[in-house]
Length: 225
Image (cartoon, rainbow, N blue to C red):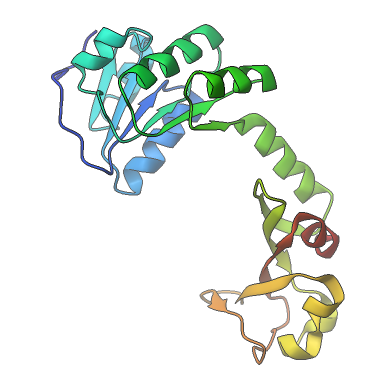
């Protein structure tokens, strides 16, 4: 284990440990930092640790599968950890086991296969994510429709950013009857060079506007097409 300051630090409730600083884990760590969360990055690869040494407040080169090492880093009872190891399934699983033994309150873990995900869940991960599969599904939705962005939730609910249909230009939401025609709810309206505004029944849809819509996945997909 090496670090300019590898002594344990008492975490606050916003702090997050990110284990694995590859493409996914590194981006998660940097994004969390931009959102104001104190981040501790852990990786066993010296080059990755060096790459993030000046970009994160604290980076440690350590074996995350070793419970004693994680204990020395002060992770006992830590509020949140992200296990972003994807290439080494054994290390991914053993890291989740070690964090579970230390009583980390919320563990997010990256999985590369369905079986990997089931194992992670069985050994203590509270949230299992499949970033490659999720991104592939998202891109497919965008390619097969007029949607500019698409987010699907586990319960069959989706939100999308879509170009407003040409026949709605200059009409209010009530007049366009999009909810009655497609089942979706228009949450917001975005004009070119203007801030997003929340939608109301009397909101007028300008030409070339973008709509933020919500509804069941099937309804949002149909509207996007």
